[in-house]
Length: 116
Image 1 (tube, rainbow, N blue to C red):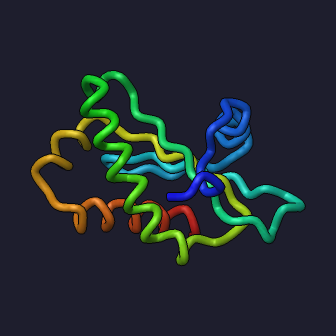
Image 2 (spheres, helix red, strand yellow):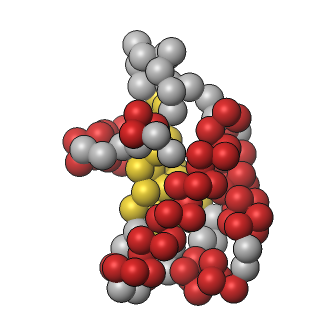
Image 3 (cartoon, helix red, strand yellow):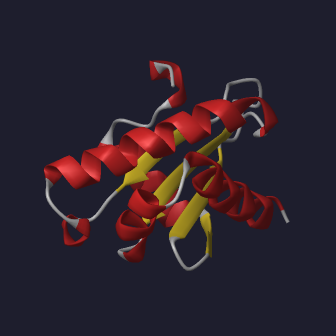
């Protein structure tokens, strides 16, 4: 995932949390905020993984896999929105057991909910 497709500043995360709408599944929570006046810009994603999930190695592994799934789905994601993907605790254990196709399905499910 390229740098222009990431949320990195805390004020961007705060804007998505405060003004965005959220949808959730068992493993993920997705916040979506439509940036006004910036309709032509690409969608951006921020990933939040709580420390409750495990050590730094586990959290970073989950983030890497989610970034790769997002990179694959980016052409299907509408432009002009910011997203924050919040990982819930059971995901780390399940990700280790399942493959990337399973994780992609979870992300596609939550994106579908966000669009509706």
